[in-house]
Each structure stands twice: as C-alpha cells, then as structure tokens.
Image (cartoon, rainbow, N blue to C red):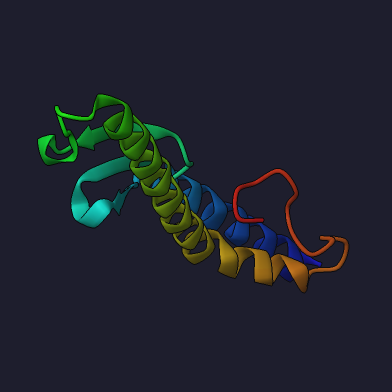
Length: 114
C-alpha cells in the first residue's frame, strides 16, 4: 500500500510539472506559406496573430478579406494540431500510467490531452 501511495504522489508531481510546462509553452501555426502566423499557448489559447502585408490585395478588398479569414482559420487549426501533439507529449505518458492504476478509470477527465 505504501508503494502505491508513493507512486501516486510521484505521478501527481509529474502531472503538476507537465501542466506547468503546458502553461509556459507556446506553439505556432502557419498558413499560406507563412503569410499568416498564429501563436497559441500550450493550453490552446490564441496569443497572437500576424498577417504579412503580401496577403493584402488592395485592388480586391472583398476577396482579400475572405482570403485572410480563410488563412487565419487554417493557421489556427494548424496551431491547434500542434497544441494537441504537445499535450499528448507532455500528458500522454501520465494518462497511460493512470490507465493501469486500479480505480483510475483510464485517465483524468477534464484535463487537456486526457
């Protein structure tokens, strides 16, 4: 029983460290060959969006607006995929370990990547 308690405490520490790493992480998503860049936190919050001036066509503002909207959406989706990979990298091994513990239920609902 003592060994199980120690294992649980170690896993709690690892979970807290992984969550801290996610809090501090930033990932970037891009689209349009780098015309649009989106920076997202490790928890999935959009932190910054940059649009290269080359994405703007002054002769066709309506088309430009739609193109930029599409590029921003694509960059956000790219960043979200990167966040998902990062979360799996940081939290996946803990989730796998918890899945093998009696009563753990195979993961921790409500936590990113779980």
